[in-house]
Image (tube, rainbow, N blue to C red; front, side, top):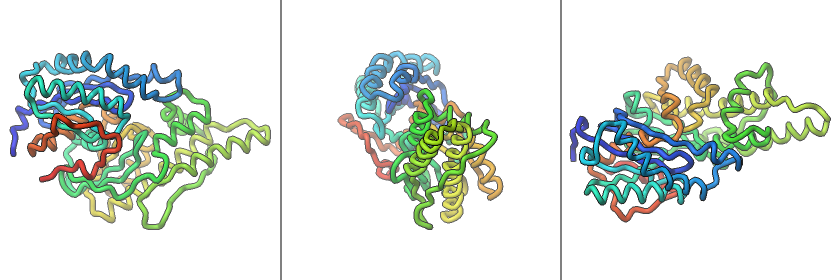
Length: 345
């Protein structure tokens, strides 16, 4: 099936965690609207996302957010080509709110439904601002995922490396809580690290010589050990130096493995994706490493790094263009496989 991208309008919905978002995307590449309602202030008092509260907040705002997306795009329901929604991964209750809203709308309007993979969205957020050239490699760094994904062709995903324990975003948040920073703690660690005058050296988990997997639980433990050692000696905790040592370890492993994978698999571009792609230290270090290695680096603007519906619309275009739609009896898939979500044709 082929479609006219200039007439394709997808209303996309994203409710996988603590952002309620709806967007209208034309042809998988042009954002007409992208409304995001964050729940950070609600969850901050608890020090992290509370799933039940997140689900209730989504239910309260999803209808209004979808209406705002259509109004800002200047389109009506009858102009739409399809409805896309995040099917997984994510918090099951949060996912269900978006899925029920999208199903209801698709059924009422008689439009195709496209269940979309959240990480495919993060990867294809790059195509909203860049032209992808295949094969390319994606470094996915977010609160729940740390993966190296090879795209040998459009919409075909092959995971060549993944975290064996904590995702990089989880590691940042746990270190931030240890240092008593407010939620979300990752940006605090990043700012402190970039402003530090010195560094407390911390270990790197390289794993097996040929492995592209990651492990950050030991690094988190090393940070805690450094804090405990200072406390036992009656010394002040050198927060900035510790943050810099932690971030340097994370960045060294991520950038080294990503550059090595690009070379081994002959990728023509490296894509940085996910919420941690907003980390200033990582963006700068990866840009420097890629410039030295002669590797084209694609990084979305900050507004497209964190969870948003425009990225879901971009990924859903892959399925829409091939007529690969989702049955209305679709279920939320908290552990949905990225590789299995790949396009068929």
